[in-house]
Amino acid sequence: MRRLFIALEPDEATRALAAEIAATLRQGIGARARLGFTSAERIHVTLVFLGAVEEARLDELNAIVEDVARAHAPFAVEVGGVGAFPRSDRARVLWLGFGSGSDPLRALVRDLETRLREAGHVFGNRAWTGHVTLARCHSPHGVDASAELARCPDRRIDSPVAELVVMESVRESGRARYVALERARLARSREDLGP
Image (tube, rainbow, N blue to C red; front, side):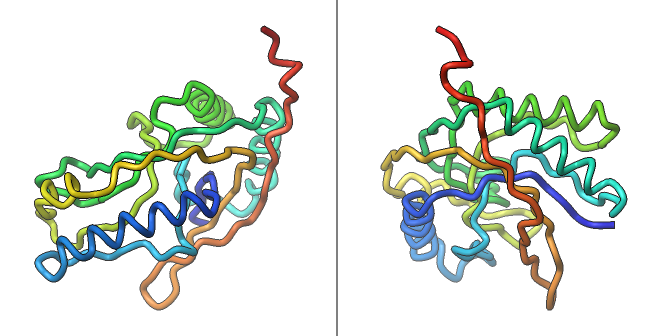
């Protein structure tokens, strides 16, 4: 079994903004909470988390992702704003917003979820929220990050969405390392989209 998810790899401008905000959070929260910050090379946007997938289904999964990518044209989304799951005063995950108001991104995720479920893949039904994970709190009660989130820079940038990536999460020395297994370019031309 392989632990898999479908993701986007953000561009350098998004990575730089994520690093800037993470630095603000690290300085503000500091040692009062056990936070694990996401390293620059691990930054990604999860579209669908599949979990354990049998090796024999990998080719089928790659074909689905390729088909979905061919059906969508590249687009850009707005990156910016910060938040926390489940909420800012009990934060377990601190995040940077990624395309939350983007109709093309929601359509891409919906298409992926539909095609994967039709093929028999099972995953959660939680509503998808576009985000880049900046840090995770290792305390079971989370941390009150309200003040630090309010102090974060409120810059907005555009980020291109042009490629889907099938990623594997591999545990090494107690940490997850993400390995890109397959890449599929969004390939539908804008002319195909109509008026």
